Image 1 (cartoon, rainbow, N blue to C red):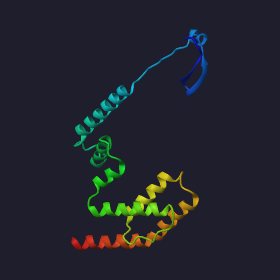
Image 2 (image 1 turned 60 degrees about the vertical axis):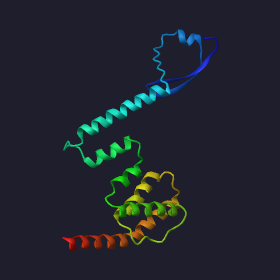
Image 3 (image 1 turned 120 degrees about the vertical axis):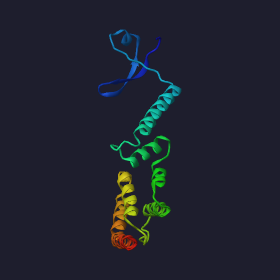
Image 4 (image 1 turned 135 degrees about the vertical axis):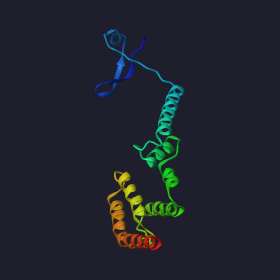
Length: 174
């Protein structure tokens, strides 16, 4: 080494940055463990990891100790689908997918202004909005958070009414 150079050092305290590593530093009794991984090798390792996970899921799909819905979700995520696509795939009917799309639209509106309460709201609709607030709460402004919570409170009577109607319809069918 002819000139000093800078390196990242990984140690017990995490990654640190050492400026100006010279020949003198290299001659000391340091225990260097250097590994170089190319992007091709990294992709190959990720591919092996994905194959191992998919093999495990396939092997244990009928195992009663594992939740089949969770196994299907994990399998789809490993295959490259995002969380929303997985939810759509697992939706029992198209109505639920349509409801989730409406919730997503209302979330976008709530970021800017208060929408009219959605008359078709149910618990799943409210849960989608709550999940968004929980996931994004660090990035939302206080007035946006207030708007989300106010909107959800306004929906409670509508959700209760719709859920009661849904139960009544199910009981009538039986």
